[in-house]
Length: 563
Image 1 (cartoon, helix red, strand yellow):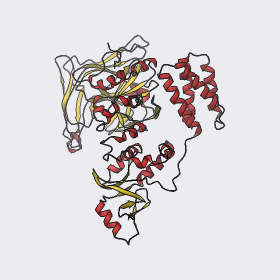
Image 2 (spheres, one colour):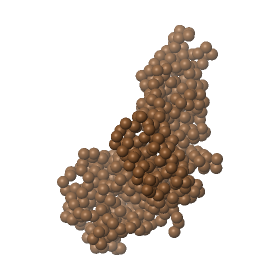
Image 3 (tube, helix red, strand yellow):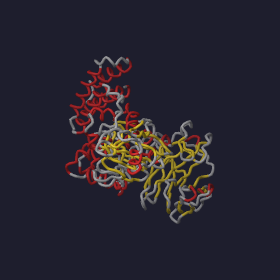
Image 4 (tube, helix red, strand yellow):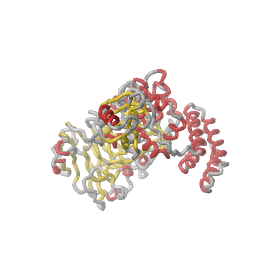
């Protein structure tokens, strides 16, 4: 068996010695306990049918249609009377078509219309797999939206269960279920399936860059968010080719480390995360949307797999750290950057989360500073703009380059010529500021004092003109990096590199020195925080280097989140 192996959880032995409790075996032709429900109830056209197979399984197949706002199909049990107290989750043995399905449960005392308590599971095409879904990871959902006020799922209150297909993809589907069981906590994890074929890209990269050895050193204390092969194929044109160049090995390494969190977060815990630090030293953002766990903009499509003893969750997009996205902005063409000489601004628009807002407009005009214009800025200004505390300032600066409506060069020229020579006409930017549009002394169009060097680039609903300066407001106020936060980030960056290179002692020593130094900062006047630092230093003094590194890092993270 290869070293890199994704495995699904198999049987667990409970404290009572019982591993699983069979709920439905499907070894008879009786399907009366189950019924189908489709989007036809709301005008859709999806169809799904249940049948018993000669092999003693339940088969659910049909076609999903997105017409008439449709797009879902399901089968559900009638009311159940099961005593599942003390069980940890549900175990299903399935053979699918490669699509991602939803296992749904209902509490007898909680009414969730158009949904239930949902948890997604991925299938492997034409292969039998065993999937375990812990009760703690089921998310209360109504019409695809999370119900924040609903209580957590309680298996003792289970009223019914079922399976949805709600992946917003049309076409045929085919799912076969051999059994549904409840499982008990307490036994070892047993591998039951090898690394899926559609994750070969990330496997190859991990091995090529030697990251498998580094993950091995973590002794299972990590979580990997593994992009599928399709996710790599969906990267903007030229990005993967650029990352694969030998001279960009460090850049590619950073991308992969951005997908690794140095702590174990099974699905039951991952759904409770707000953010977590990656091995690349950037922060990943987490949210539950529509019953799915989101990591930044990627959706988790399979959970609780295993790699080198750690936890693996499969995702549908490759995550690019902002710093890497900006470094790659010199590519000739990318989907995010339709203008070869102005790619930095598009990376910043993405980092600021403005893409959807701009895409929702009928038409807009972007005066896109060239990459050279950004390079001419004070590096400290660019660095400050990328700080989380300056997110609003970054959005404001970017929106200063955007006006409503599609203004072509001809229209701009007509506007500029409509006033007396030497005067300009004011146009309103989306940040609310007034920009001066005029013909400069060379007869060229200029906006806000910046010369327009290239005009009329059409991209979707945008008209783009390239300009030679960044339009930074004279009164721009930026928060500078907190000295304590800057110190912490540097410590973590060095510690992560020491740890990953195998120098655990240096990592632990660096963290210890950092905590001792943090104790001397006058700004750390929180007595509880100081007590946590003192406790960590004392505890680590009697631990191995590896355990000490984690103990000290936990204390550093407490200081980090307090800033």
